Image (cartoon, rainbow, N blue to C red; front, side):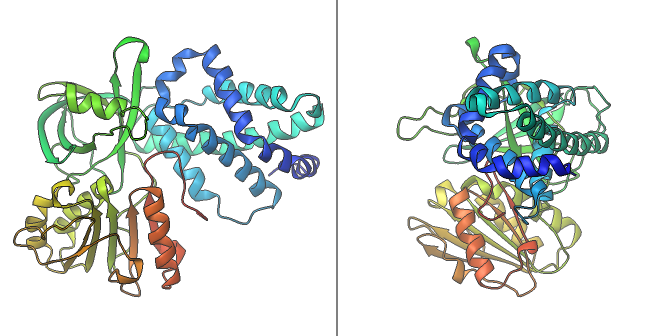
Length: 403
């Protein structure tokens, strides 16, 4: 709990900090990377270049301050969980929070100048350390649950045993541990971090990919869409590396499974809604349910450019045969037939939330681009789905509106 004196100071200064939030976090990253360039190995350089990372950090700090001062009644727990899982997947340590705090407070002083009195600096330092302590505690629990000893590395070597072309610009990688040890199971909706070493001064880069295979199998599977730059933006560094450079027999460094989202929540009707590569957690969910509760009522709604771009499309007949109450509703932007031997409703165009088959008591899992999920979530909320029954997985540092 924020002290009474700090609450008054933070409440009074929140508008100024919010107005300069991205300038502060931008300066923070400049300072930190200049002093500790090795930390570039932990951060997505694409998100740094686009400004998405500094925007996400500014939003998180301001939102937490609003939470502490009572300025916002929005639930904070899900945001903390999302940050903690992402940090754990990167191997963030408790000691790194001291370094971050030092550079963040220095950045506030540099941007706001003499307006930052000792009282203001102390109040915002208290906000930061309350946030840091909450995250450190959550991350320690996650490391324990994942079997990562205190101070130990999260990384484990995995060998690629199969590379499968799934669709246009989409490949799956089947992996087994190099050490021959057990393959951890996972809850559908979890992701792993993949660390690769790039050429030149790019160093290590890390990305998160959902586990798309069957939980409990003797291997893991990740499915990677190659990111091609649009409008002058560069191609994705890691996805391009995986597509062009990684073959059967190569090794990759992977983290344990993390992620705050459960794609199979509840035991009643389940609605899985995805777009593009966002289908990956839904595939793990279908594999798991086929093994455990094949009679569960499931609706899979998926949007894609066309059938050729629809990853894992060829797996749907097998899964449909094992899940007799699975209903498929597909939206393709361009004309395309349904998968062979699968009864599926195919509509041309983009998804209309009002036309999604919906049971009144369904749990919902969304995964896809942020605009897509915002549209679908808004439509389902209007149709009466309670907010607590809509889970979503975001690729990247963003959050849904109102989440």
